Image (tube, rainbow, N blue to C red; front, side, top):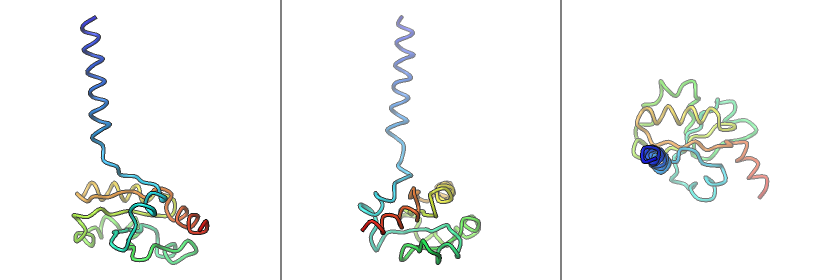
Length: 126
């Protein structure tokens, strides 16, 4: 019985340590717009140039580096190494990959889930 309690305690402690120590690396577009976005926010758009200038538009001041170029152009972001970079794409899939790539290269990065589809939808609601 004592052995079972120790094992159970181990799993509970391990679960809470992992849960509490995780950094937030994904936020919704609504959270981004209401609590984070301002003129000093570093936004990386990983869509193509055609998408960036297309119907969904882009976030003013966003840095455009398409996801297929991000790995070879990552040096362009070195000046933002100590800041949080919010990564956007059309829906949140490519930006999640971009966020992971930035984190692997010692950047602080967050995926803005919902992407420009959510940005556009929220803009239309206003």
